[in-house]
Amino acid sequence: MENRKKQIVDLAIKLIQQKGYVAFSYDDISKQLGVTKASIHYHFEKKEDLGVAVTDRMLLRLQESLMSIKNSPASAEEKLKQFIQQQAQRFECTEICPISSLQTDYESLPSIVQEKIGEVSRLELRVMKELVAEAQAENILNSSDDAHQVAITILSSVKGALLYRRVLGDDVLADVLNQLNRFLKKP
Amino acid sequence: MENRKKQIVDLAIKLIQQKGYVAFSYDDISKQLGVTKASIHYHFEKKEDLGVAVTDRMLLRLQESLMSIKNSPASAEEKLKQFIQQQAQRFECTEICPISSLQTDYESLPSIVQEKIGEVSRLELRVMKELVAEAQAENILNSSDDAHQVAITILSSVKGALLYRRVLGDDVLADVLNQLNRFLKKP
DNA sequence: CTTGACACTTACCTATTAGTAAGTTACTAT
DNA sequence: ATAGTAACTTACTAATAGGTAAGTGTCAAG
Image (cartoon, rainbow over all chains, first blue to last red):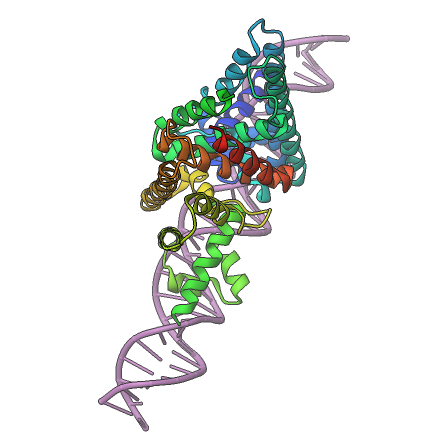
């Protein structure tokens, strides 16, 4: 059952979004799946192995949404909006971005997972940068801005907004997305 | 020795910035201070108590920097810059904002600490909002923007930048601060 | 000189954590 | 029928976590 492995990884990602890498345990996973802890260890011998599987899955997800957006016939503006929404709006109010969660726990991560989350972050930034550059080419965004700087600012503000939302409530994300739009629209 | 209590709280904040609330332990603190674990428990019986002391200290720090900025003779623009730099630039590259760290660990926090970190976040936002409003009044920032939305966007992007900096390196923060400046300057 | 408080240490307890070894069940290919 | 493999369970270990009780040294006030 290759399905079980996917089940475990998906649940691990959800738990990481809720509690972080350090705080989630094999016990959490086994109880929610209705099996024993040892059975999780059968699929992922060490927590580190599960960590690598988690980051690999995050890489895959990113590549998938990159593909689906590249093949989309929408305008550059729509693509950008779509990607941001895809990253942010699929999470519940108590959840944050799994990338942010692993960045926060960075110092406690096994070094292999540290490297992997670096990869994920760089890919995410590269995708965002491409979308920004495309929007600039279509004259939707100001071309005098540096695409790299705009990209990392968009990512930072959305991820930060998810953190504040957890504590200050649901409007935070809407407010930040709204203001970001205003910033980007200005000539 | 009331000094020892302050020592413990300050170290706890540093550890929270590095590893988060869940991952830091009484053992970490006692070893770094060269005393036993039980001695830390003497000053703060439960981890929850230390957590409350930590958030209280964060509130105090915020209020202090609020005072020092309010009494500053600088322009609204300078004040805003000063406050942002004060929040971000005093941290080392491996550290993130302690508020962000506690927001990330929110679900694992004792409920009293949850409430406290809500207080801290709201105060932080209020301060930022005041600074933005002041800058708008002095026509440094666009008055057609909503002060609240601008404030939460600034905070979110700076906090998010600190997360990415940890993984992507030192430029990230500079890039985001730079781009934020460009966004805010536009007419 | 003694009392009492403060700031500890020693020595423990319990719960939880990641992780392992050995056995069990069920399905599958020969 | 049997051998083998995949997916488990039972039962354990060692380390670490938060937390506690009882005792120790030091110092200052009476």
